[in-house]
Structures are given as C-alpha cells and as structure tokens.
Image (cartoon, rainbow over all chains, first blue to last red; front, side, top):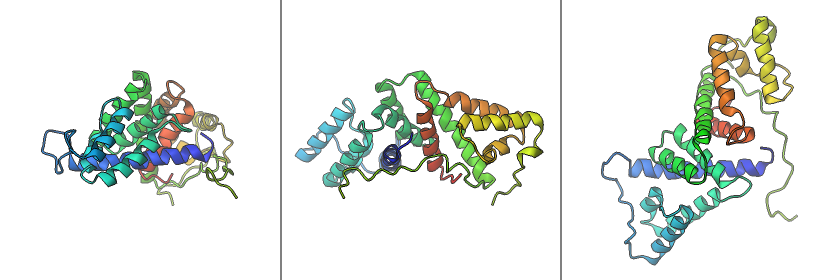
Length: 175
Length: 84
C-alpha cells in the first residue's frame, strides 16, 4: 500500500465512519428503545430531503442509512455530510469493496452496533464472501490484541521506517 | 519507555531466535533488530507461537491482499490509539 493517496482515503473512511456511528449508536441505538432524535421519514415533504434520500438510496441499493436520517432535520448539514460520505466511499485509489471492509473493521473495533451490521451488509452486497469477512474479523481481532499488548508494555514504535516517503504533490496541485 | 526490558535477540533460546528471524522475513524488511513486538511474543512461545500463527493465517492473501490487510491492521491500531 505505497503512496499517500491510499492512506488519505483510508483515513477519511475511518473518520466519516466513526462520525456516522456516533450519531446512529448515540441517538438511535438498536435494541428497540425509542430514539432520542426521531429519524426523518421518507414522507418528509421537503424537496431537499427527498433528493438527499434518493441519492443515498442509489448509492446503497435502496437503503438510506439511519444516521443520515437522524441528521436530516437540518438538511443543509445532512447534504454536506452525505457529500463527504459518498466521496469517502466511492471507488478511487481504494476500491469501495475494500473501503467497506475498513469501515467494518473500525465499527467492530469501536463496538458500533449500527456500523458493524451496516458495513457487514455492504461488504456482502459488494461481493465479499464469508472467507473475506473472516479475514477482516481475524485481522481486526488480532490487532486488537497486539495493540493492547504494546500499550500495556508501552512499546515504542520501531517499524516506522519500513514505508517509503511519497514525494508526489497534493492532487491537482499546479506550481 | 517500555515497562519491561526488551531482551536482545542473543538472550533468547535458539528455537525462539529462529522465530524472530521469521518475523523479519514476514515483513520482508531488514530490521537492525527483531521488532519489539516479536521479542515480546518470543518471551512465551506457548502464547506467542499460536498468537502469531493466528495473525499470519488472518493476514495471508485471500479474498483481500496482504497489503489490504496491513491497512486494516493499521486502521484498527489507529482506532485503538496505539502508537506502536
């Protein structure tokens, strides 16, 4: 995974995944209880909401993710959030299928009920088989062990020199 | 500063030193010394051995490539706020 572009993309997926999970798990937790903030329904009369939900449905094969519904009370905010989500998860230097695997790993690590189920579903929808799912679970679980062992013993980084420095400029940069 | 003294490779028994050498091959990188985590896991081969095998089994190329899995590992480490 050489080249900074992949790592920037991965970081954006991690960040926006956590942002969605925070809202979903915090305000509309699974388990049958009433959400603290009611998700906006499809019947909402605002044209901006309909357009936003239509775009989300197109991206997610008919589904509007719960956290997007929760924040759609402020549709201007939700539209910008959605633009960032869509950009982060669109095929680029990293494939969307793999980005969903990253989001699943993040959600599992942070114990997000919403994110774990949502991104597991997306991985499968995008063609990841049970073997692939187990691979991501295995790496996530083992590195949830390594990180805690390293932290407990306060190990200092000693593998940072492996990756070569990427000399390329920011995309679209014109001196 | 680590809370334990990380032993030099020469302080490990021969069998464990081979495992430390194997960890360098896994990363395909000529470390000046075996990585700290490898030396930690070498402390108890009855723990570190199966732990390492489970990690390598999960990280082998399969539906996802080795590089992709290293990125998953980096992301999990980042989310866990692990500096190592």
